[in-house]
Image (cartoon, rainbow, N blue to C red; front, side):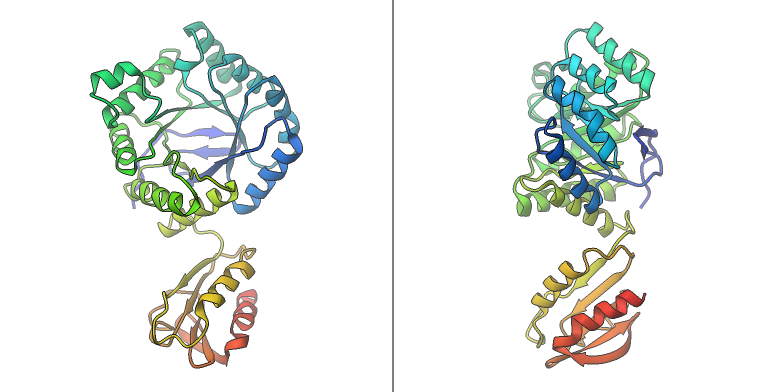
Length: 349
């Protein structure tokens, strides 16, 4: 698929926009000034494949903690700022890699200018965003409530504030909990400006439902070529956000990294405990960093032939199974040995 051509900005050492890889973000749910727990969570997110992390900066101690946090992590960190422009300035002072704020809610134009000047001096980008619940009343009245027009033009007002100060290190988010509305808003904005887009479905919900909503919304936009960085918003462990985000990218061939497992849904032809084998395989293969497509199929019908695009796989039989590579059978083994033998073959690759 052809990606929309956008400007390139950076957050720390991560380039966003243009033809750069689509990055996966998350947000800590720790108290930022609790450095030990914040660092511990960020390191676990790094291990899951997180590219950029964001933390809430609610007071000066949160901002001061940025220095120590950065010394102990390996990915860029962004400050999430609400209302108090001084916290943005302090975050910049203590080494933040990027800001998430809306110019319109941090005070007078003079305060916005102070933040913009500090960002310019350090080359720090700003993510400007409007959620469906934070649209300025003026635009709700003008465009008859919450819709793609009120979202887009409310965000554009924030963007124009920065542009008028000769600042364009900007990325945009237009999140709603409603999937069709989110898609329409990003589509509309993508035709107006060429800034990189940060995709997400806000308040998507608990892990299962939130994963479905995020996959539909973000996946739809990415398939249109819209989107330069993503965050999956789930009520749960942030590590799950990163895992889901990476799987969305893999499913669209926008990320070719790490293991990919394909498996059949099982049917009356399945005579091995496929569900348990798949569950065990996911756990045991989680640390494999190689880019390999693994097929775990229930029978010969859905085995080497149907899964021939896989690099390696297994197909079940009656208490036994076949191991195949690139559609060609290489050995037959007992069901109890299938997974062990599969992992041995993967380790050889």
